[in-house]
Length: 482
Image (cartoon, rainbow, N blue to C red):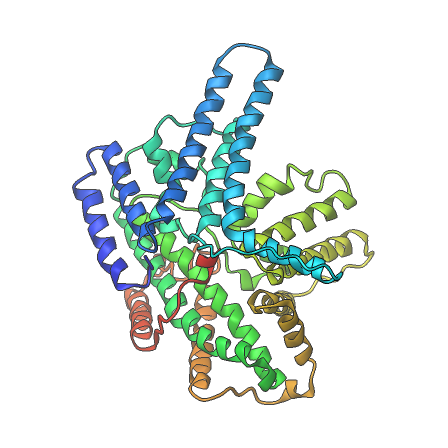
């Protein structure tokens, strides 16, 4: 079920009513209700998806129970540790194998065949018609974090299977994050929630801002972006620049918009989700960008990959190795395509270059934010070309076509798409202005400290007006495919 759908507009008020006015007196029933409606929300795409998420949830819950049972028995500490490693490792391998099969089987088969064909060996290996379950990467990583945290004794394993299933499947963040940790989200299902009026109002504000970024920014940008990237050979370099910039705001509006809707929706049910974006296009450098973009995924890789590999504690060589491992895995996590791998490699190179410059250059220039922010944005936009391109050759062609004297021409695209581009650019400027003025807040439309009522409600009215008259609502959320 899509947030930006009529079905969700019916679904959400009904769930809200039953959650607070029917099941609120019994925590177990309230959590069970969350599981049922979350499975309804997820199964709306394809009921077969429910088997996978239920299997992932059950295996991860049982792994925690099993680890606790092993530890409760007295015996040799070394043997106990090895048994726990086998249980945790088995669940991790099982879940990654499921993720790998559904998401990467055809990718690796095609790549394997291509490598051999390049040296003159023809292999006849068939691919499969595999349906990629929506959001499988998100809930798999969320479940894995529980197993790892239990193994590392950061969290006590839960006996409450209903609370655990609610943790894995909680519908606002189920298909596109934030990727929550059990230490934050699971523990909230252990205790009764109460109706907090101010939190709910705040949640509605954040949802409104998320819908604006998705429907007005992202979906209008998508029309022009699809035209430019689909016909890039026929456009001047100036139009290609516009296409890359619009895609940067398309993916930001799309993904951060989803996160805002998810976090705001969770507040309606007394649940606090982690911040997933912190105004990434105001970053001072690439390192700062990755502290602000898809925070839940980046901190996941830091905690469960980067730090266990040694982080930056074991010298420059190990640090460089770890950075490349993390960003290559991050690129591959985003999709089964070499364009995503190259996108990850590109950002790994930027991160390492910045680190080495700061460490070894005797004079490392420090620029004012008015310079460093746009320079960082340019580097990020160039990376988004790899992310958006369908193939690596297309990305290379697109980048090479930017190196043309037509770069200084007036960017024009065909027909009605020009209108979408102009509408997008107008609202992008509006969005950036609002977020810059509120950059110290958790989200752009956090206006509760604005004293003048007419300013707050005037802005709410303008946003509702723009959603109604300029909203496109023509595409799914980009990160559903991941």
